[in-house]
Image 1 (spheres, rainbow, N blue to C red):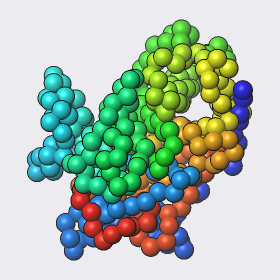
Image 2 (cartoon, helix red, strand yellow; image 1 turned 45 degrees about the horizontal axis):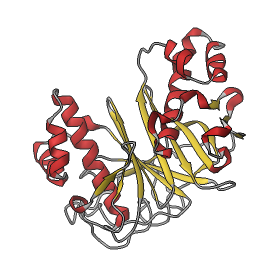
Image 3 (cartoon, one colour; image 1 turned 90 degrees about the vertical axis):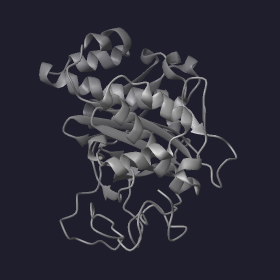
Length: 320
């Protein structure tokens, strides 16, 4: 089964000029500050059934000792034990900030306190909110790499997110594990472009595997992405028991050396509307528009009227 998207149709709207205010809200990238109450930016929000909200954070932006202490206080005892097991301080820091970000983000949508969230781990290691423990159900996925954390949130749909730092890599990995059509397409490119194509395939594949919740039980050569011609196509082998038409994908350039991808299963013919925000735990979030390199059944949408926060506020204040 093959489905294909048009890159021009799904390209992000142009970045607004500094100071420009649209009828939909504040200028893109404007920091939303409320200084009258500490952490009042962490209010409760809702998300439409056809939306995905993506939050990006730089773990290195969180260095204040008091903030790190507050992050650690949010974690469960089991999470603290896992954090402390890492040998290197940088890995402990990445774990701490990424899991605090999950809690502060998901709590906004689940209408719960971040420290109260309880998770279950699936057979293949994917965490989910424990059913019945929050006023509102939320689906989410976490990914982190050197210098970048991402959390994706949907109201009810399967979602997978992957972020990767582009680095030197053995392209022979693709020869052994990617679909033949992907290898052929990558190897046909100039040598200087093959690494970027490798990471494009890798992030897309990881996002799909994570959304399915099956890990490497899904063979990487059993499904393929087509990035030739400026669009994005998706093909999956019939024996993998899935329908390509049910999925939305996007490949993003978050920073010059970082790529991100997301996969959302909403059903055939449904367009996933997505928004992107940045901000670490206990920091105000701001909306941003990363470059869209390719997309399938997705649409980048502007913020709602008012303050431009992710969704409509349920109450004036929420815990971070």
